[in-house]
Length: 93
Image (cartoon, rainbow, N blue to C red):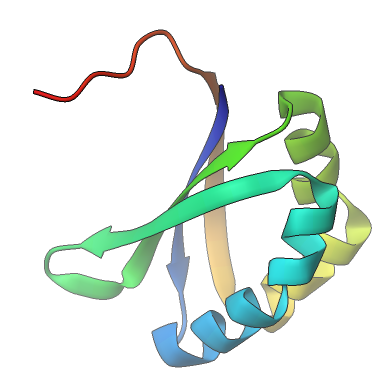
């Protein structure tokens, strides 16, 4: 399984979330299979987007596309950090 972990600060979570939800069809068409959103315990505007993808190549092309760079800027995203990850093990205890 292929995953992307993105950590970023947003100017306004509610405004960012509306744009995030509006972009769901774009993410799905690009190869996103599913996601989780998390936030820092004491900062609602520091968001973690953890997602599963059909391939890391598809994810990288999507997140680095000029359209997504523009969307992130409009959504108030500051200094995103991207980690492109491949699953080694997945267990429940």
